[in-house]
Amino acid sequence: MRQGRPTRRLGGMLAAALLTLSSGVVAQPGADPDQEERFDCRSLAERGPPDTALGWLERSLWANHCYEFQARAVRIGGDGVRSLALSHDVVEGVEREVARFLDGPAVVFERRGRIGRLSWAEGDAPAPASPAGIAEHLEGLYRLQLSGEERLANRNTIRLDIEPLDGMRYGHRFWLDTATGLPLKQILLDEQGRVVETFQITELRQPQLHQGEIGVDRRRARPQDPWHPAWLPAGFIPQPVETRSARHDDDIGHRVYSDGLATLSLFVEPVEGPDQLIPGMHRLGVSHAAVRHRELGGRTRQVVVMGELPPGVLLRVADSVEWQVGDEGGMP
Figure 1 (cartoon, helix red, strand yellow):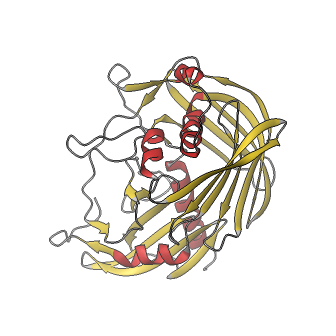
Figure 2: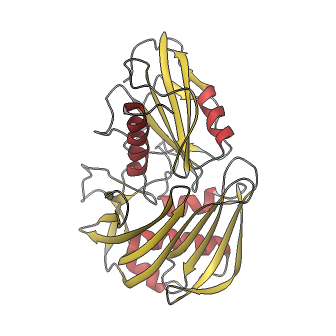
């Protein structure tokens, strides 16, 4: 990879992708609080312990939204070991999540938003809130299995193994707090079953169920892009998230696709100026980035596909991007 500005640009794209998604929470300004759909977190207290692996997964997804807490954690990946301070709270129906790295470069991620939806609105078709939609969508893509109980961070957990049914995505191991459903440990496994990343909470400080409601993002119509990927792995669907970012120029198109667990970001921009990336495969932490320079819309454009997915999958998506016939203008 070239050094200097191209490297920073790739890092900026990764940062934009990370800020776009957070367990189904996305920053969606401008929603009318009197009109939005809401989820009452207090309903979780009325539910008994799940009796299936899928039930535990859905419980964990809702818990990520509804529990307020502070925690310390450690992340182990290809770029070494880093410790973090985490916090999550809800104010007037809007979530706020902060992750602060405690060693190495000083990095802070802060995200605010409502509960996201699984897909863009398509006519009268349902666009379910992401936790319920994800649990239903995973059928046929992964095999879920409960694998016993362990004690972590001085709390009882149940282990949930999630194995992909093809070689197009990575596997997961979750250790879920039996009292709250919050994930206390997560392991990401590549297509050969090797550990790619471990994330573990070492101290969870008095998690409290939010005694109120959280807003669900409004239904959003799909934007009309002049380009689209002609191929995606089975189960990957466009995500209804706001992708405009001050971290990159307006002529960079950015869309997000997910199967509910795995996510990829697709960027398309004109090739111009000195800070372009070398075509091929790049690695940044536990993520990969496939870079192609393609003739699209009457000019050369840089296509970047990023995600925690097998490199061959990212390259195939990048090679499949097509420009709509008749759309020869610039980026919207």
